[in-house]
Image 1: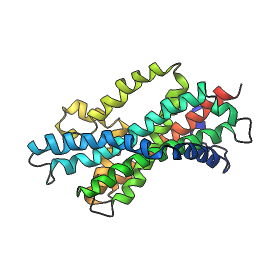
Image 2 (image 1 turned 135 degrees about the vertical axis):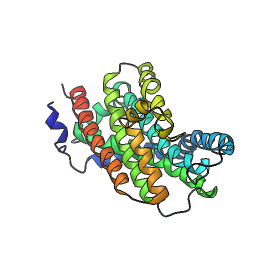
Image 3 (image 1 turned 180 degrees about the vertical axis):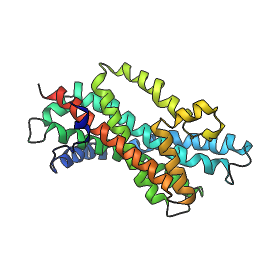
Image 4 (image 1 turned 60 degrees about the horizontal axis):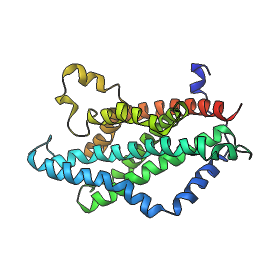
Length: 262
């Protein structure tokens, strides 16, 4: 695969929707428990950090700390759900359950499998974000129509991390290897991307480096739209996320196709 191929639209038909449908039918059997556990951890963070530790912070640029923290935990939820589903879930389907190999016996192509799988993984990330937003609305943290475009942004964020997760999945050889990517990249990234505190508090060198992290752009876009609406900065952040999400999807297609088509 050449670098220029990352920009070429994949050759797919509507059959990728069957892959999404297959996953949805499986999810539907346990959706209540799955959604509960998906939302429980971020809601615990919202309570412990947003309301607990946040009670000791008087002002965050004209907002309470929990109002500052909420967009960050919303974005983090979409990222975590998508990345975990795209790694552990997809790894099982690729290597142990042989789900993708079985699907390849039908007219569905490797490209359609990847696009359908990323679409499903991004959908699960969106489901998690919607669950957190729904509970937060009862706490008075969602009081604007801007939450609807924010959910669309979070779907794009989930799409990017779903594609990234599928790339990782094609490289690892066992479940244990995922901890290196989670502990070495995902969690450290979440600590310095503006979720818990403004990145302006970081030293100059580190602050500039955080803009190389996709989560920084995602959090900035979500927080900006929820606070003041769409600005050119928010559009720039979203455009970057969508662009690298497109690249990750095409790379994931190339990697999975090499795994499935010998």
